[in-house]
Image (cartoon, rainbow, N blue to C red; front, side, top):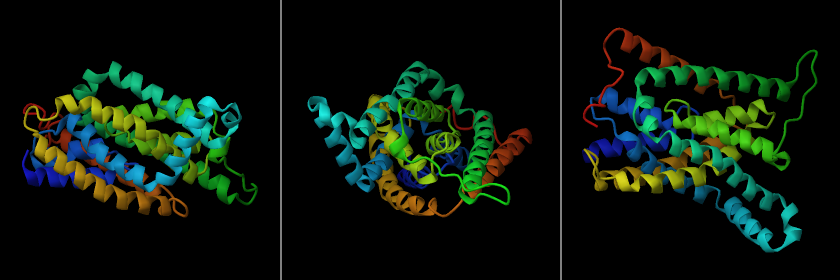
Length: 290
């Protein structure tokens, strides 16, 4: 991998990690369209450490408060009813599904799941799911001629059941094209949470999963065509760009719909199918040399 490739892929990772459009799919597609080798699952997981570092800094006050309350609750029974302490446990509970499934399906994640036809399918299907979830949220928030405004849930109402459902939604992102934020936010909206609450828990839930995945994949870094230098460079780029994107996205969702992302996902999926069907793009583009 050249330094230019690592710059572009780091930029793509930072731009797409927090948006509900799938960063892993865009890394895969960028390489395929540019005629580069597939950067691979290890490169993707490690560069995600950069974007998760952006989450740690952006939500540093929330995370510090949650971690502090969680540790205190281990020895102080009075703290166990504290919202931040419970949030610490819920992040742990919600991280279990992706941890178990990630290890179980490691070979599929690094192989068959990177087929561009599967990515096109997940882009479209999860785009439709996000669109439905967004419409339901909008209906509750605005009401209508014959419907009163319905109050949606905040994170204070999050329990173990919902935490696990969020976790299984996050695990779907093991398949490129699903999108970690897209799946968890869709799950949250379908369970009746506000856009802001679903997005905030989505980002907090991703921290242990992504950091663990990145550390797990460190042993495979530097193998094949991807060396350590470009990987680290891409991770730094992903961090800088990702911080700017997360700040914008958290403001965007307070007043805007997810429909632009829904339309983008569906169009991109259709274009992929058209290119593959016409023979202009191989569903395994770049894989043989990866």
